[in-house]
Amino acid sequence: MTDFHTYVKAVGTGKKHNRNLSEDEMFDATIQMLSQDIFPEQTSAFLLGWRINVETVDEFRGCLKALSANVQQTEVKDSIEIGYPYDGKVKNPYLFSLISKVLEPHGLHVIVSGDALQPAKSGITTKEICTSIDIDKNLHYFDRSEYCPKLSDLSEIRMRLGLRSGLNTVEKLLNPAKSKYALIGTFHKPFVEKYAKIFSDQYEKLIIVQGNEGSPEIFSKCKYWVCENGEISEHYINPADFGITYQKSWERITLEESLEAIQNPSSELLKLAKLNAVLYLFIAGRIESIEEGWNLIII
Image (tube, rainbow, N blue to C red; front, side):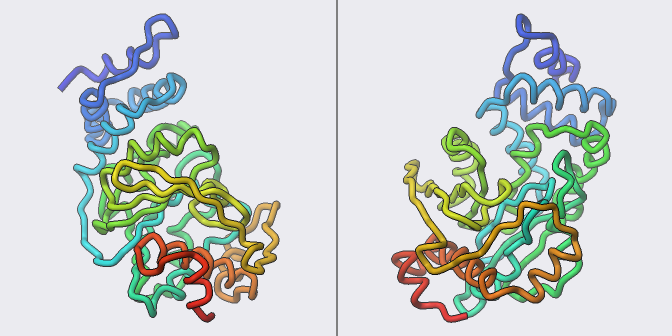
């Protein structure tokens, strides 16, 4: 185990002397942060410097390896993991509880993880939703304080820092249910190849969606990428092609408004949930095309 100060210096001494960490070094640095044997100021300094220094794929992979080593998995067969950001959603409701209802007759289980709020969007978290609604039998909520408590215990330090860090990226897909399939959201296409290199090894098939608020949820026309067997294929989907006219919110919504939207959904929100569910069935190989699934499912 290397003196943690070495890692702080690597990312925090300026352009001339900063350097990227190897995968093994990042694994060690993450293990030390999780153990909290180092000072919290060192953890904060490293997370800030790492962000400014621009994270590499090797660093992300080393971090993910360390986090995964501290995850207690409970297998849920025939499941698909949805990698939501831990800083929450701000402007639109979550769709996962509606999606799971659509998928229930088809035997595909939905995995959602949650924890205390992380920096920096200050949105509504999956934990707030899942602890406020009745959970359907094919929707499985994994609380990170239980399956990866060491990462959960860093929440206070991260909130005091108040800024995004590389942990925001890696933490979204830790596969607590040993799922074969997973979705993660991205804002920008350049991150697609990076995410594929970071996460693909964990799943038979990884889907990257240019979704709503950085989540993997489709609310409007967007691209999505299928990562399988080392290959990435690009696709396009437009809710309007399926007669969906849902208007996204551009204003911040409250937890109460979000809960109301999913507990008493409009017909258009239900159609959006159906479209997302059809994508999940397509990912899992249950249908041959999105169009086939759309015509198959009745809501």
